[in-house]
Image (cartoon, rainbow, N blue to C red; front, top):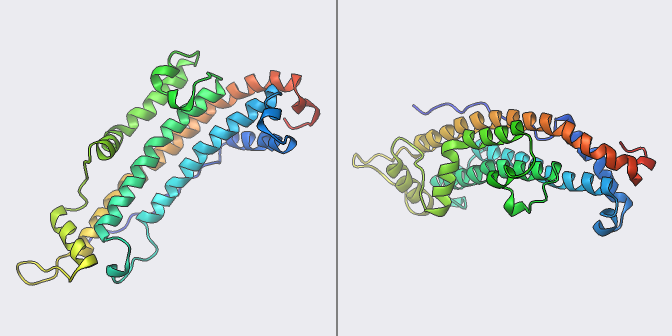
Length: 256
């Protein structure tokens, strides 16, 4: 019996007040022709730079809904020979996209912390090791560390998958699923020793539901983690932005 599809979880990416505040301030870009001109004003530059990296983080978070679309397809082809990939390859591609984009959420979060606290690190240098050398509150560092720890086995799988060529299985009989999906997509339908067609549809559903379960679990958690991070960054941003604002051109536009 095939497992039932789970209820799809859709990630909110920009509901927090901190995100709305930064987005509102990003209108400053409209007042300048170039970034060089904008950079002459500390308040404008700070707001713009934080918005730039925060937007990257929210876009990356939002992109995980694309993975959800792949895990909950509105319809699958009746004939997979007409589809660009086999059922097995569909799950492989989905798992790849899921792992890369989910793991990189924390990397984007570290870049945001670097920008809010004005640490001056390049994007490539925004690692936990380097952030610990900067004057960042311990509670923020602990929270980032917990986010990394929660990624746990998925972070390890991402590394082994993309650096060592490892693959994951997708069903109770992964070898049968792989071969059956390959024949279904490129050749004639595969049959077992009993002469019956291999249960490709059931094995495909098994793999899809398992990925759905994994996706829903970590997505609910990552949204809570990001909101907690925004709770900590919001007052820090305001405490740094306000002095720059009082001394800069923003003060004359009534933007804050």
